[in-house]
Image 1: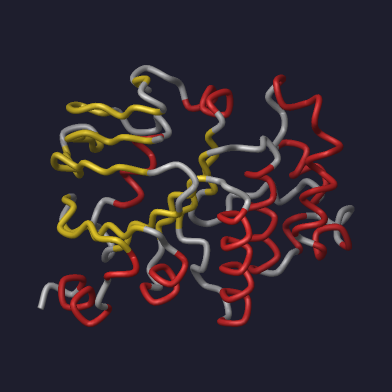
Image 2: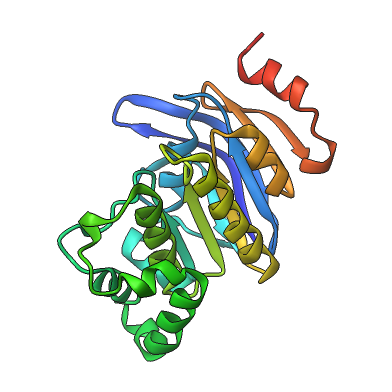
Length: 233
């Protein structure tokens, strides 16, 4: 579904990604893991058009995404749930969700997708009229995920969903990821919790210094070997 072919990208004169190549299969959950500074978030931003690609190509269903502005990615059935949630704190939970379906092609299914979001995240229904800025960290992450799903994307990109959350909430979020995968969505997950990430994934990529140093089916992964590479032992 998503092909990343020898991509280089970065910020101005600073290059971060070095000839990165990945294959994201449809209906599968692919996880990207690696230490801080490995280039994981930069890769996600390059996919979304937030960081310019200086070399290589990113293709979705065989078509190049070069030149596609970020705000058009929803039209290609792609949504990103960014690190840090980035919810609209001064808007209600319901208003945040409605913003997830703001693009004109998605407005016709607004009521249906809103009801589905509340069914998947019952706590958000209870807090529909509450200001998003008053939510707990776990609730804010649920809101960010639900907002991303409001455009009914086939490719869902999620950056560090467990960051700063209590273990019980992390397990709840990963149960939701399993449900989304079971629905046939294609998911790209960046996650620091290697055990949880591998447990839910179909394929694992490990990044170090802006390069992919391991590509392996999740079922074949040795966590001990993965951690040795992760910490560059």
